[in-house]
Length: 168
Image 1 (cartoon, rainbow, N blue to C red):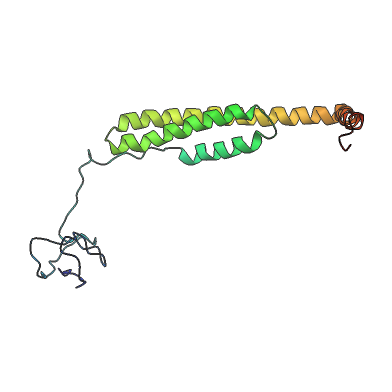
Image 2: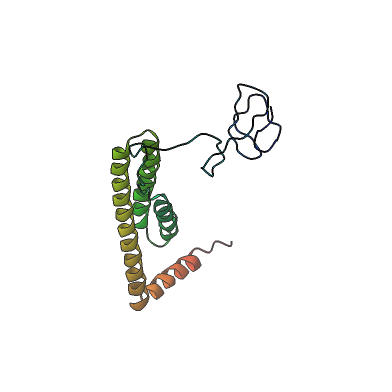
């Protein structure tokens, strides 16, 4: 079979030309003259005019935000254990964001909108806990360094090391 638009040879069971994207008619194996079409697409005579009911709404999925919250939650848990809680909520947000595209593909825009709202809520909860964890760790480190507790802690570590000499 040959493409009627570009003349490229295509397989007998191919429905779309691999070279130009023209929709092929598999009913006959002879090239057919191209009919004029006002559309500038590569789909031949196939006119796609979606009805307003079949157009899916644009619903935000917050996937990027939830992935960034997971990354920053994992990084900041090195400084504050409070950020681990943020990580859990960010994972919940990512799971909910994956359900949005599934519901849109199934034709349930109402459920997709509901999961979008839930994902946004979990992202904000995770972000709030992450910010609170960062603020608490900064306050703790400022307190630790300003009161002399850091030097006492280092002295205790050094005394422990010299008390139990591990080199022998």
